[in-house]
Image (cartoon, rainbow, N blue to C red; front, side, top):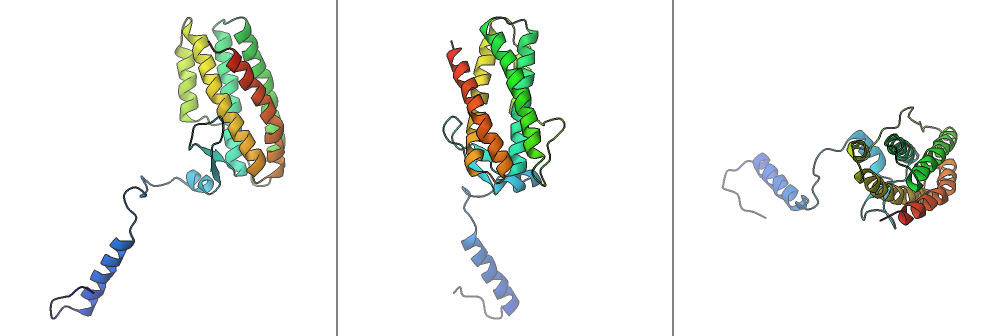
Length: 204
């Protein structure tokens, strides 16, 4: 118990003790938050997992229905847009065939996701999927790529995108919170796994 000067009021002593206790119980700098969380982050933070095989270590994967739908629809949209960019550059051969497969399979995936989401109460599928900042940046880089750099960049982006998508689908399929969406993830994961194998074969 700290000693206080004679005549110090009980209120002042109480405030001083409260401040001391607060300092003892305060988190250290390593665990302190770096800034205010958004509403979206609050909604999904309680239901995320650490990425497993095929994704960057420590990356959060969505386990709530709405978070999963948002991430899966953005993933499909990224694949569709990047494939169209590649086709617009006149790339031919194996890579063009891969891009055509991306358009076919991810259009089907988008339709299947919409059907699954319609069965889940409280989950909404955006009319225009919202890409992440990283996805939009990659699309911008692909648009700006010229010559031989475009095919190589597309392959690198596809490798990363499919590793993340596969980790997301397998995680939600086993640990999600909605059966229709878990079924969708389980059926879609093998398709994405095949894409991943195909793009790995195209690596230089």
